[in-house]
Image 1 (cartoon, rainbow, N blue to C red):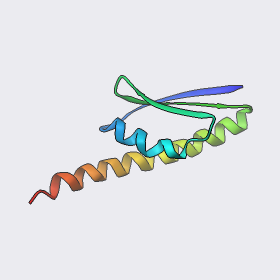
Image 2: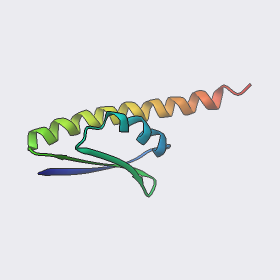
Image 3: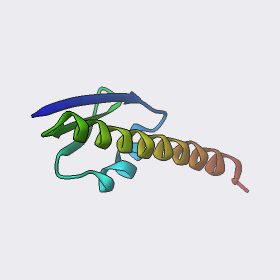
Image 4: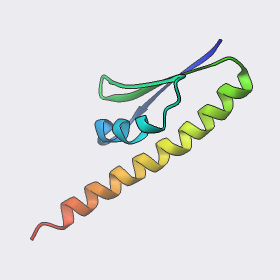
Length: 79
């Protein structure tokens, strides 16, 4: 088995973790640890691990961007 652990820092790690978790495959686990999003991916092959990791990183970038935009909209729409 091949395994990778990815730790990332975000302004709102809970929101980012909630956003990406539904896209996790059974070989993936996401949680928050010390204010960071931590995802562990386990696959049988290096190629499978690379592909899953690439997909995860794209999803993570989108989730982080959406979380940042959400914060901006919430902060500017107070009437």
